[in-house]
Image 1 (cartoon, rainbow, N blue to C red):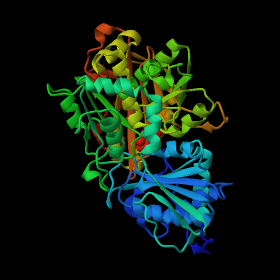
Image 2 (tube, rainbow, N blue to C red):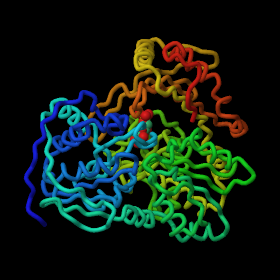
Image 3 (cartoon, helix red, strand yellow):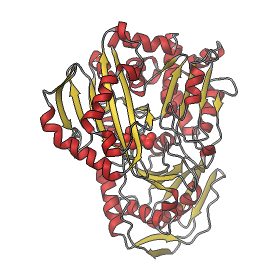
Image 4 (spheres, protein in one colour):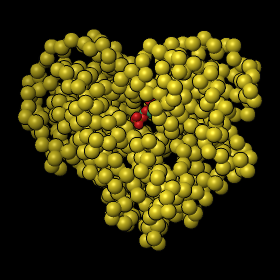
Length: 547
Ligand code: G16
């Protein structure tokens, strides 16, 4: 240890746009690069916390442009604010689930994750920062609102004068009295995965000729996937595509959806398809799974994981319950019902699962936005979901397609699609939602063609553990028979507004499980436009992304 360094107090003025969204603060990189902008937010985080003096903070990110500079700033400010130790992933790399795993493993006070997730990176793209608490999960609204309150009143922040730390070499060093420990970003996470899944069975699967392509999208999961899939599990070299994290993700948009991973979808639908294609996003918490000839929707993936988790050693005694975000399809509800375990419907945002996981109410959580995870960490986890699929494939000795088909035959199929209208004018988007809200009391009982509205509301969530209430979490229109239309505005965009329309129809009859999704949902899609006047309010006649 070296002597504490003198604390330097830097005068600053508030920015008025630092309210964290669905998952931390996400803005254009250039916004973060303005003088004092990042420092203000980091000080607002620290000023919102109590009792961290001498304790450990985990810091890492997805390696995007500005990651390294941001880490140097955070190291000095964390030292000035009194943290005892800062644990940093080598070269500033920690996937979001790995950061959660490290916080839990090392019993840190909390962590700062630098990422704008699936948004592109680079000087003209996006950057982001979020705070995770000691359970490893995103800060709950109580803390994010306190951060916002501090950011509006901030007059100064604390830092120290110190040389930049070498974050590329493993080992320990000091900033004054604060220890800085540079760790292997993969090791703790890799051990955790080995403790949950039957690596021997998955190794045998690969040894028997099973083939896979995993696209790391030049983002954070490359090193994790190479170590686990090609290293521990013996997948053929070349299984991992785009495995080197790049600051601009190689100019790609690291969102593992059917638009940005169309090449994987096309491969999976071709004669040359491997047994499974998969991908993860910028910070490694989202996943995409496509079997040979079979795309798995995130909502179906959650349901199938919940139904089969007992096949993985870490879950062999069964699951306590399942949670899903409200817009996620009800496919998992049917599994929870059959297993006689609890089912929870939360607002969008992984932070809402933390209390349920901590209280032992649920084991598996998931979202339509390509996220699934369990109580092993407090974030969604892309590679975890893919390893779970590999474990299930190894145990059931069936293809992805056979497993999906059998699931639908047993539980019925929830046809599901999300239509996004990205970067539309905020005013129009707000007007659309306001008009819908005004309509809500009149909708119940109305008939639209074959569809009868059963109920309509603006989703509100009462957290059963801490009693907190979150209102206005999405407009739901529920129809007799289990069909739904849900509208909400994204909380993760960085310019304008993004309208998300979620459309779902339940089909119990296995003879009708082969329809093309958009065709199966056609009447609901038309009604979604009619009820919300989407084209009038957004000026768009079709969505920019369909997932
Ligand atoms: C984040 C949140 C997720 C949420 C998703 C989409 O994911 O962690 O809980 O479902 O955004 O949110 P929205 O619909 O508000 O844009 P990620 O992968 O971006 O961190």
